[in-house]
Each structure stands twice: as structure tokens, then as C-alpha cells.
Image (cartoon, rainbow, N blue to C red):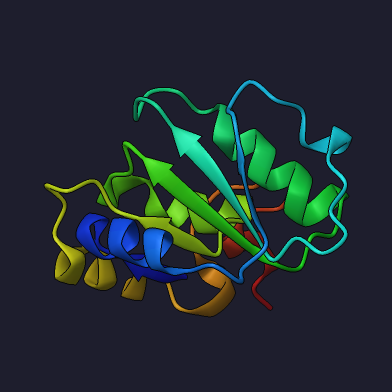
Length: 133
């Protein structure tokens, strides 16, 4: 997962002109989007307690097979990163008070596809420990 500091995101977003991206409100249904030509979809967390963007990311990545970047923006905390990756996010813009090096260390605790799979989910119902030989 690509991690972006809040200051880098705002500078990058205003300087980039050729990337086809969409900012999807967190109350919008992604199934209504025309994904042709879209390279990045920004999903917004107005508060860290509002989890609707998790559902949107899941729909985009797994049900709609969107292959572009799914970016978390807004009130994004280090504690949410493993679940974001598990839900389908490919990038996250950390809230301004979140430490980028701490975020990298937090994600490194879960190598490869083990991120957050200590319990089952809708995609893989068996927990990680149950799939071991």
C-alpha cells in the first residue's frame, strides 16, 4: 500500500493535470460509476469512525474489479491501514498529525497477503491460522 503524507497529497493533487481521477462522496454507490478511463478513485473518511469508504473500496476492488488506485483521504489514522489494505485500498493519505514512518512500520507487521487476516472476512471466511497446513 502506498502511504502519502497529508502535505504531499495536497501539493501533488494540485500539480497533477493528466490523471483521470474521481472523488467519490462516501454516501455514493460506486456501482453507478462509469469506470472507463478512470485511473484513481479517492474515497473520503470525514471522521475515522465513519466506515462507509471501507464498503466502497470493497465494492470497487472485488465486485467491480477496478484495477486503478483506490486512495483513502480525510481522517485516515495509522490504526486503520491494515483494514484499509484488506478492504481494497491501494493508497492512503495520512491525517496531518499521523507519522509516516510509524505507518510504514505498522504495515510491515503484516507481510504480503496476511494483512489483517487473523479473522475471516467476506472474501476468505477461514481465518489465517485455519488455512495453515
